[in-house]
Image (cartoon, rainbow, N blue to C red; front, top):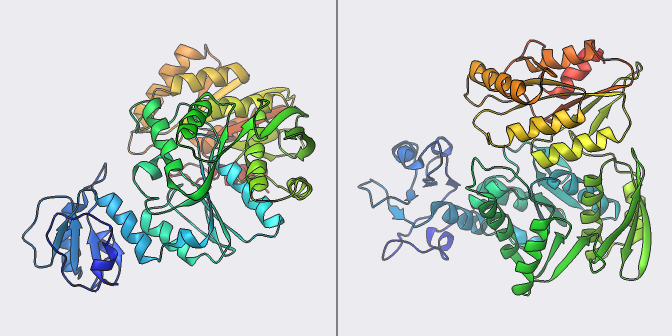
Length: 480
């Protein structure tokens, strides 16, 4: 593709562009082959400008970056924002694929993955072909692909959208993905907001900044695109006010009488019966999942499906066959009457919602196994330990991903936190698999062993048991 076409909507720091045929676009220098374009991205850990020479050695025909003009043997084009440029170029290179799909973007602190899976399930049940892009990977044309981030980088995202032959695309949109402009050039038919609470404050300066970035997803709606917002969250109320001032088509779900989809009641524990009101009509839907937060996720999914013209009877039947989401309140039962539950909960609000839902199931004791990731938001740690203390009879603190932090440092912090908050209730096991095994060996009939923080994610470091995930550890312990 001609360079001039790739950069037709991009402001450059030059009088003109060279006439060059670009073979491919990359921001990793090791991916460059002869005739490719290399764009230097400044990241938090590495600066792509340091790899320009390697890209040229590998055959790059043109370099784009943010630094001042450099004396190079190939053309160098300076831009104001390399990330924005990458997103726009990737969109053009892959033919602006979001125009070819019914695009559904989901953002929020908690519930993105479960809501995405619910929507994906309902749409397919209703006869739509549907791709899924999110935390657990991507499902495109029925094939599963691993992705490194909840929202893939700009090139990977546009490549996936281009490859998809499905009518609909449901994707989770993270605050990192928005801030790093991975979705630049992507337009959505529906943007959905689940909730917002304390998270990623190691990356964002404060909750207001976090909210500002999340809400900017709604600036990427297509003409006549619609916003779907949870009115029961204070930040959702704030977003509603913001969207109304911009005259963006808006539909809400929650407990208020003026919501487009109102929850009148939900009854049940392991399974819940929701009574919903849409305009003047009442509907009941059986949700085969526990927890008030899953009711909220389901309502988001139902309202989205209704906006797409799917009848309530179809939605109701579709939910009856929903099997849940991997790593989200995933229950493993054993003949000894001891249950394991795995959940991805890694925020204060997410953890409280998870443990509250499990507590309501009536177990004899809740034994909670969890830890914290190195180099991540430290402000939420004490709050999460206090939440665990509230709902658990025993707390086993262990390691999550270290991310370069020493074991000794993490154990020291866990020991300090447990002595401050848990008053002898906590046990510390550095080895995550041994922590899970200890809980199992000391459990009694009627107990529930809850493991949070990782969900279906693979361990970054090796532990004593020959397992790579919490799920594998459970199967190994139970000899499944």
